[in-house]
Image 1 (cartoon, one colour):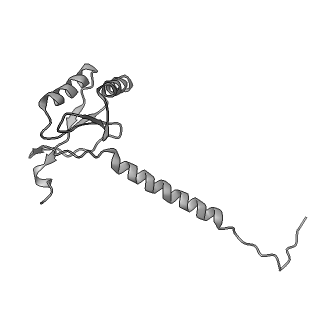
Image 2 (tube, helix red, strand yellow):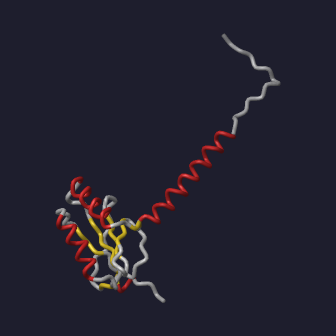
Image 3 (cartoon, one colour):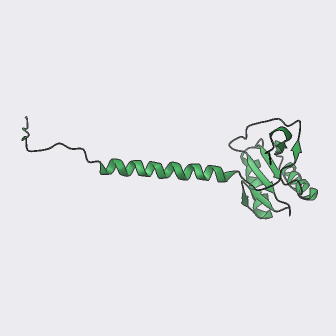
Amino acid sequence: MQSRLDNSDDIAVDMAPLIDCVFLLLIFFLVATTLKKLDRELPVQLPEASMAVDTKLAPDALVIGLDVEGELFLNAEPITIEQFHQTLREAAEANPATPIRIDADRLTPYQAIVHVMDQCMFWDLRNIGFHIRDRERRPKG
């Protein structure tokens, strides 16, 4: 069965749903990129090294930060010592080869760094690295 269209009937595509979808996608990507930048930043003065090896951070890596007072951060979020122990236990149970990066301020007490490393070793997490600043790449200023 054929249907006839009158010349007076206009065929049009409704643009409102398309515009809504585009705005939702725009908001999603703006939020996603903003959260990615905040994920791994911690305001610490990293120590310098001239013989540093530039490596990429694994997506499943735990970034443990220590500020000048020895306060703990996990992926740039402050955590308590109990949360720190819980996180290490869960990471060890999930994957003992989980990479761990320690971002410690150059003035962080050595005892705080030793405590973090000791806890990692206790849970048999041995893939530990340190984040440092390369002398050749340091910012000019």
